[in-house]
Length: 636
Image (tube, one colour):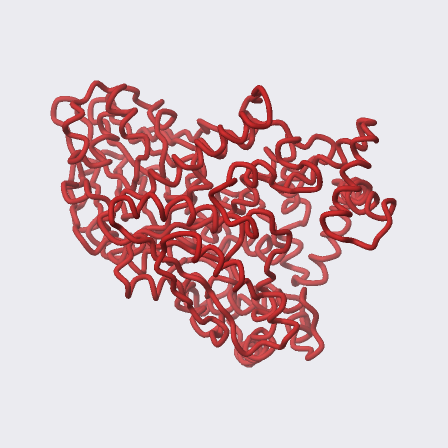
């Protein structure tokens, strides 16, 4: 993981080295190993490098090729290197030395703007084509590597973090009111927008073409466009998944430092650890695992959060060096202002403190590559969407058969009809309740309850609901439901938050479940491969036969990490909010309805109110650290 920055003077004025150097200095923490800046007439680029692969020692960016007139900067790890060497006709003897950035440059020479479609891995890169006077940018399919930009008639600028863009002399970036409203409503009205009007993010699976007179952004991949895949039988599906998943894990072990991994004892992290550890052991490299543990909770809270038996089962099964990381005494609010400064925006990730604690310990162990099972749930899919589909399509025998299996697996005392209502009828009724008209009425009431009347007038709820309506998940088609869930913007935002934090510890986070080969396979297979005989995530369980300890492979429960957060929200969050209300930023007074924030201080506040405490504290600290005035006029 590295940091990239650059400017393109669309008015053809010479780009200033000092401007890009200042941008690079703003994100210097992303790359402690090497920095480089180069100017190419109206364009200047910079990169700060965190070396995590053996080939990074040979990486010298920005790259420039005189023959083709191309220059490039990249924050990238390319995982299909061997395939690209073959397709590009490169000397295989150079594979151990050729850095990923140079491989990207070769790919762009061959395929131009279609090159992202040929790449597997995590990447954000920008190419300046001197002959066409065009800047081209692209991000990986899932958005693991961030890229932000601003575009005016005279200037285009890009960076791995917003703070680099805000360091450019001249431009002012008012608060994006709609983004703030969406933050409190926990929706995303426009995924490309940030909390700063005028600064956008390049969306995952997108490419951007910038010319002096115009710019154009367009997608090159979508989970909604993955075609179905039909194989011979259950065994064939299991073998195909296992092959892709093992490949996804192995290609993420390319490292010049010790490799670490999160281990919660859950199905996702355990699958990664049990697949990675033996392969690392073959080359004499141990896998270090990091597991969060809690003390100081009540017996009931401990029962909800404790996964010690599953962690221990994996640690005995796989050759790892285990680490227990105590997080029960951590106050998630204590470091929130620092994390907001890293992230540049308010974020919603109450459990971020867990990963921060693990990264702290991993960095002390010299780990620079950290494997994580983030969002394996969504990628593989629990598969429960199959049940309302069976009900609606009249496949009632299969539906009630599955309900019977659920009752047996879970040892539920509920009757079949009650379980049928829970898994079949309730999703259908919830879908009706989420209809555009009912949602509009509900969200309008929420907005008027939370926000100041003048703020509501400027940001009518109907505007904020457009994205929510566009992301409603279908319930009558399990495959379409899975595709739509993978298209939601929330994963990309979570990845950005994790990326910004990991960078501060000199760590590159890697996600095997977000490998595009794994993602496309899971989207393509029939829903019956994801849910079978009462088992959710069946394709993963089947593929991990002999890889996982059986007790982990077929576990039903999952830890609930919320008790500690809600406890600290009562002990610390409400107190911080109360202090903020004594002297709130002017923007807070303009944002919230009088009395709304005060009501959150109720000692009997429920979970929903405590979540609102978190967002209010985060927003107040961000505003206090970023703006000292009220809302400026938003840019159109």
